[in-house]
Length: 167
Figure (cartoon, rainbow, N blue to C red):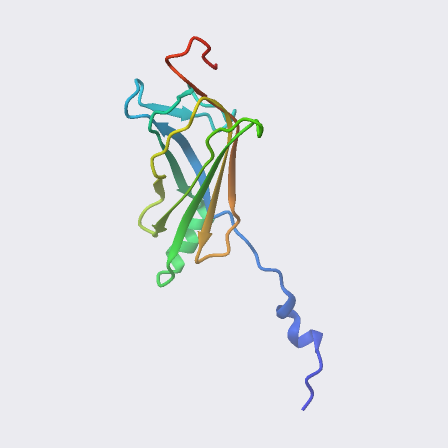
């Protein structure tokens, strides 16, 4: 019995795994239930928030996710495969010297061929006054898909009672 490598027979063994763009970020906003306006949208193009967040007030990060054309086709073909989207968010202070809040959270939702848009809401949180960066990573399980990374290089949080407001 010959167990030697035979390229003409084993060619698929070395074929690259093709990753698809399965999901995309359709929208990002912060819900501040005690503020007016309560929703603060993030521009996907400029990666800037419509107005600064308020320090020490609860907010919820909400991410709208869309299924791409390739993702729709895959979901329609894979009826018995459980596909989920997991979002991981990291908010960290821009100045490592300051003792500011650091926030990270994970949320997940199942995806189906019936729905092409989803809303992922992270657990409520608060931040102290300062400047932060935000990184959002979306991972898809149950399919060989590219991860999606959304970054906000500057997220400003101000204390509404101080005269020295950021923004």
